[in-house]
Length: 457
Ligand SMILES: *Cc1c(COP(=O)(O)O)cnc(C)c1O
Image (cartoon, rainbow, N blue to C red; front, side, top):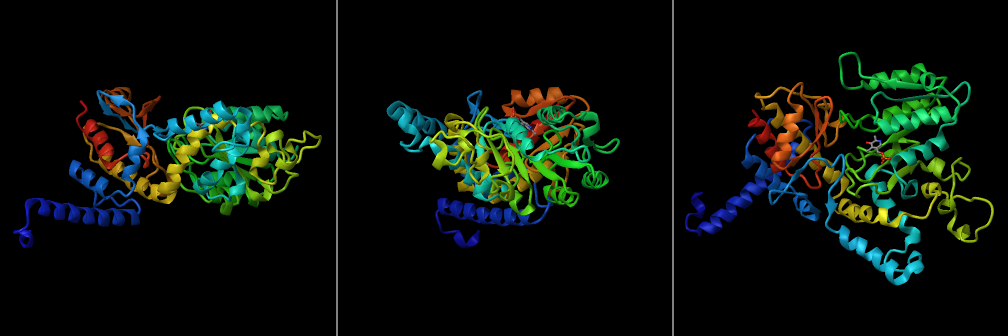
């Protein structure tokens, strides 16, 4: 750089850094605007560092505790299973311990966060993540329990219309929930549950196969209960078109968002989805067994006659403590609340959601698309090992996770990752799931994963 010849070396370096930063920002913007563009990516540590430099969300990594490996933070790609602990959590728990210690029963109405309304503190942030109105979202129980409760409200089988469509290979808990729901209603699972499978020899489900199954069962279909994203393949389903198709034949559409909430932004209200539930300990980092979230569309939630299993926490607050006969639900999703708010199971959720509010789900998604595309690009450079990426290639059909199927050595590669301080998970037969959560994973992390695979023997 001739024109800075007389400047000090330090200043030159600063200008170079600034220039590199601008180039990186420019490249990042370009990459973000093109779906699946990989031509600008480079398989070098320098390129990864440059991308991290330009990442406006990079500082969020510092907001989390990382498990240690040989004195260093691990690289954590398991946020689709259990998210990391935000550093704000211990103090947040101490706040509620203090209210309990100092106010005891007074904590319901006093203290920093009166417990009576605790579920309402986390709902608006979750509503933003899934594209809902605040009155359509609440937090209670855990995911499978909430699915059961919502299906009690929305599965109203008759002799004529009783069938349920779900994805084949759904998460086992969802399969058990639907199977037992059907039996509880006196139907036979074999005759009632229609599972949509990938076609012969394939691993992903064709959207048109879901839609045609809905049409083909038009007169007998009561409900579609699909995963928003399959936990194993990482396939993201088109909830808008599934909902439209279900409604067109007079069926209800509900979704399990365990792998979607905090991963891919949605528009549940506009898509007219009837109900949804999710857990908060995966991408939402709320800790093991944390309280789950649920969505009930306002057209049902606002109607206090929508059937449900009730309890006092769902009752109108004006009459709740009068302890009178007659359940009058709140005319919103929290009208499904049953028991006293599980304060300590929501403290971490509240702390974590504050980070989502700061980062913004659209910004996170933007970074996530680039980060996952970079991971995919790097994986495609590898020729020393043989594997297949079973997750869809299209960004509209996937989130942060890529599932890699290894015909051999899957277990050994998983162990090699752990020996190098990279946490991924392994599912028989031979699938390693890698989920670079944009909140705390970097381009350098993804590059390190590639480097270990490159050197694998
Ligand atoms: C993680 C997960 C669950 C777990 O349900 P819990 O009731 O929270 O234990 C259920 N369904 C799906 C699709 C999941 O990914």
